[in-house]
Length: 469
Image (cartoon, rainbow, N blue to C red; front, side, top):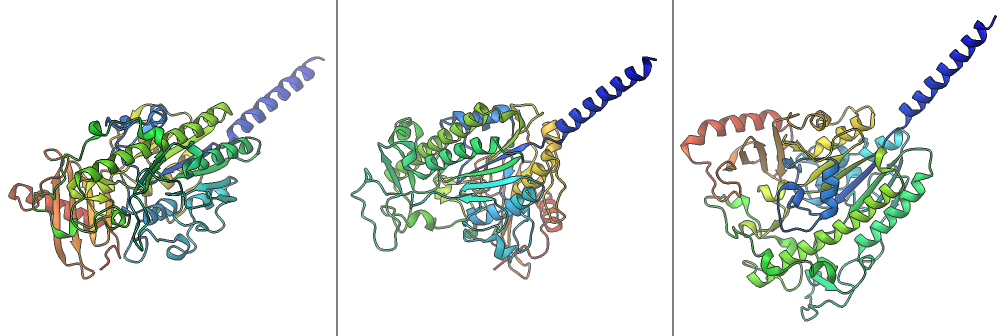
């Protein structure tokens, strides 16, 4: 007579266990999506020394870093548009800093809109898309700090008077709190959001876009004081690479738009040293703000169920090849930092696979268990996070106007073609013997077969409409 009751109790317990498991499985991971403007992969976690970035490095220790990650176009607006849509640049889209996603890729499902459609609460703070208001309908909340955020304090270099059309000094150091500049305000806003988001039932996609180390190099004085400029020094190769074509070089007009920078010719050593010092200070300043956000994520008990992705939108030249800024096909412009920490994956991993920024969209979707939109042109690298010794692709493409670069094995090969597909310039760097790209070896006979193979691979994968004149 007692057996039915036992059966009922057992059945009840099974149902409770089943529903409990279902509830646990239904909990989606949150996403913290951190963008850092103009950040080079010159970080301790990437094997470099000299830059003080303990918070970025501790995030790397919890996740997987990708030293061979490449932006698909080395300029902020276009690179961000490519990341947020999962689309490569073409002759008609994603070409410049002024790229607008809603104009150049209308109707495309963006990364935040895809997460929003799948039940996520989406917030963007600071500079994630290049323009405020882009990605219409993708964000539940969008916020950017008010004011210019640059040279609004009395600078130490006040003697440098801006001429008409210029932006003011290229650097500033003042004895002010971190919140005096935009990145400090952005960090405080993100911390406030995390507290609110913890109380929501739905998972969140929180994008935080820090502005430094983008020009001007403005950071509180204490971050400047962390460095001895003499130890920073100048670039080891402040000269044009041997046999580099004219198309590879540029006049770094972005930097020249600031007062105190010569309008022609090279930047003098004293200015170059100040610029490099300022860049380092800005990296450490932004790193501190990232640390505040990561601290709050952990304090609130959210870290164990949050995917954290950190990326710089492209590389940056600090005097290498006599160049500054980005806007070119050299490794210093197209190689950028990328790291992902996700629940259930080991930390402190280094994956040497070639990775492209169009791979970020499908990767986050897979980590979150979301379906992939049909338009995506990248490949998820989740498999590499499971096995860092593996590879999800063996080459990466990056485009700057008519110049298309393919990175494969130890080679970085670039072709410049017009819209009729006629080749008019090229360069090859063998990173096995020349990691800093000081000698264009495209004309050397021993590389002839490699060049032919790289060119064919590039042609097969560049896609229609990849050229512009």
